[in-house]
Image 1: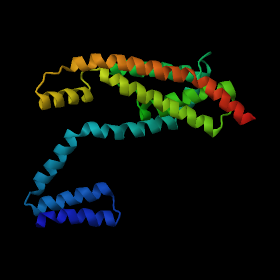
Image 2 (image 1 turned 135 degrees about the vertical axis):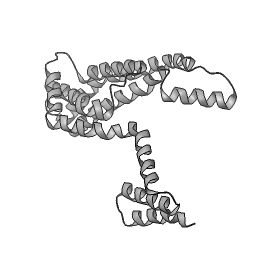
Image 3 (image 1 turned 180 degrees about the horizontal axis):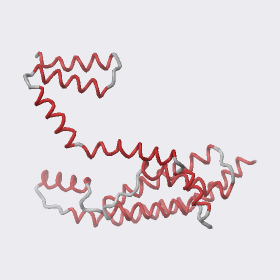
Image 4 (image 1 turned 180 degrees about the vertical axis):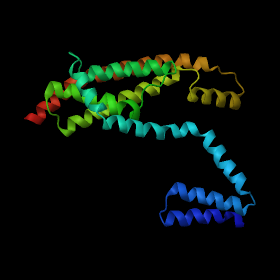
Length: 225
């Protein structure tokens, strides 16, 4: 029972609003010491846990790198770049990104993401295209462009990744079905059946993106009226 004092450490730590990571770490150390585990083994357990989940911590490395690039003008360069591309509108740009995002992730290449591409590159370029066509944009138009930029990334990733046989969701489905129903479902079968769905998603959302430019123009007229 005394080992459960680690739970009390968690309750007290959260009640006093200490750092959650520090509280959980101290609770783990307290429970381990009360359970008779030596400090050397505790340190070994922390090291093994960090090494086995280091892929999760990569996200914490990407965020400061993106912040540093934005500090040195990545968003401004993206806007200037789109200003030099004649004929490129926000809808066409997002349609192109949707196609690239969906095709690359279908082959196992994850080149996008809200933090890595949408916020620092895709959204500023789409916003720059709208400003080039209409000048200063009100908040309503800005939020609409943000939403469509995020949607293009999410839809492309969601429907494209199922076409790749080694993605986690495909392996999870096949593993669960084979273990539960004693069948032999091949990941390649699921990937092939995901292709028509991915094509339909691209056509439907691509049509919405092609209509985006007209919708933004109407919103700008309503704002000016």
